[in-house]
Length: 160
Image (cartoon, rainbow, N blue to C red; front, side, top):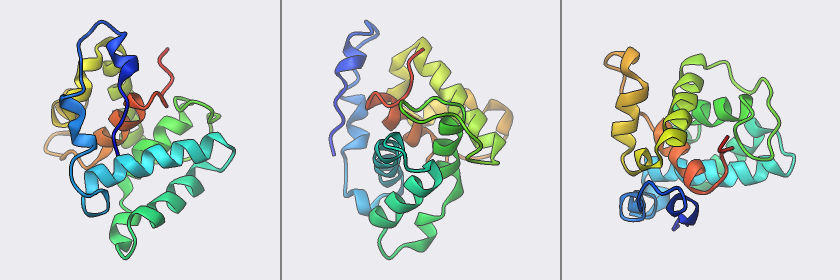
């Protein structure tokens, strides 16, 4: 999967195509992080057509992670996606009570804010994680930023 980044070029903050190769590297079905980016993109499209975001994520995760039940239910990337949906930040998806994970929602919203200020944050999910999760202590990046960056780069996140 290759994500088009033309909307980032217009931002005047630099070209991120090289940095965003992470979204197209490797076999999606065998890589958790890029797999979760793919789930997020597909779930956002499905949710924008009226499917409940929780169902959209679950359905797409089942398709992407065939034979890998632990990957289908991994909570951090799912909660980041649902947190953005709950906040009304995914285009075409009304705000609502889609997740109880306040931490992952907060991380995802903070990441969107950083991206709004400077889209070059999208080039490095680990750097973005470090910036938004300073208060999380030793908690590790667990796919949340890949979800946010994929949605951002695909134009699925409200920019304002």
